[in-house]
Amino acid sequence: MYQKISTFVVGAVTAATLVVNAASAADWRGWNIHVEGYPNTVAMDKFAELLTEKTGGEINLQMFHGGTLGSQPDAIEQVRLGGLAIGNFNLGPIGPIAAEANVVSLPFIFKDVPHMFRVLEGEGGQAIADGMAAKGLIPLAWYDAGARSFYNGEKAINTPSDVAGLKVRVMNNDLYSGMISELGGNPSPMAFSEVYQALKTGVVDGAENNWPSYESTGHFEVAGFYSLSQHLIIPECLCINADIYNGLSADMQAAVTAAAQESAALQREMWAARETASREKVVASGVVMNEIANKLPFQEAMAPVYENYLAANPDLRPLVELIQATD
Ligand code: GTR
Image 1 (cartoon, rainbow, N blue to C red):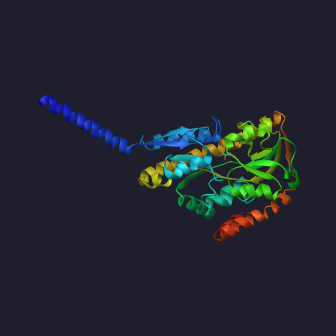
Image 2: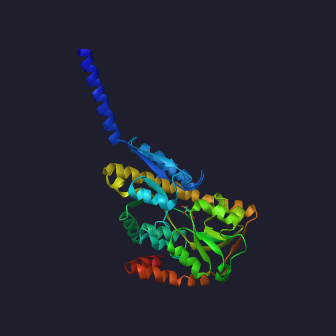
Image 3: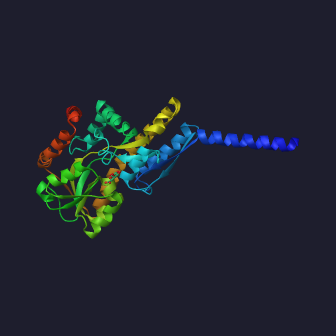
């Protein structure tokens, strides 16, 4: 009898311990669109490693790379709803959800990448982060995604009239569709994973992206003219579901944020090296790269895109002006 009771008690205690552990240790899932070896992929894996280390094993993140858990717009919804805890997102597809974040998708708003980071580190970045947090997404750190330029399989682009008539893939965001339309092209919003096949089969004539994505996706194999328009400089976030983050203790929040900041420092360092390596690789493979001597006509053509954004978001005019006035 004694034996029986003690077995029962030990069993009950073990079960209770398991319940407590299950409730206190968290298993998170994370989304990333990029392939193995891409700076963001390596940096997200580092984030997962640092999370376990800095939280003493209280939080464990399982990363899913290569967009295996779905398209970027779907994954953004999943992180907002809490089905996924973490994602590395480009702010492009976040713009339609958070108007403040959409400011970075105004073509030519940033002078260069350092300008973008100066804005993100200041009042402008806080306004963008607050706008995203209000929609359920907290940016823990910012990743570099360089500048995006046009590419296609037909010709070098030097003036807006070279874009006229081209069908160009864009990310899901009306600002990008407006941007292509104002240049006289036909915008085609499409998921990242579909672009290679669309370029290859002629469903679209061209697309636009930074050097590393142009290279890692193989787009350079099927669209061999890359024209340095650098029309968009869009930051990326290492984002977390707001309820999950807000539910953590202050110590855990600090550990998560520190892990994210370290991951971002690694990503930015690797990004700089990868931009050069990707450019060298595609140019060596025969890609025709051209500088655009005069970008002014492209910039001037964007006036209606800015007007439409400001007409829809009159309260965000100060944010646009703040960015433009930042040195
Ligand atoms: C990449 C970016 C991805 C995705 C992709 C696209 O540069 O890192 O998150 O936004 O572009 O064009 O869809």
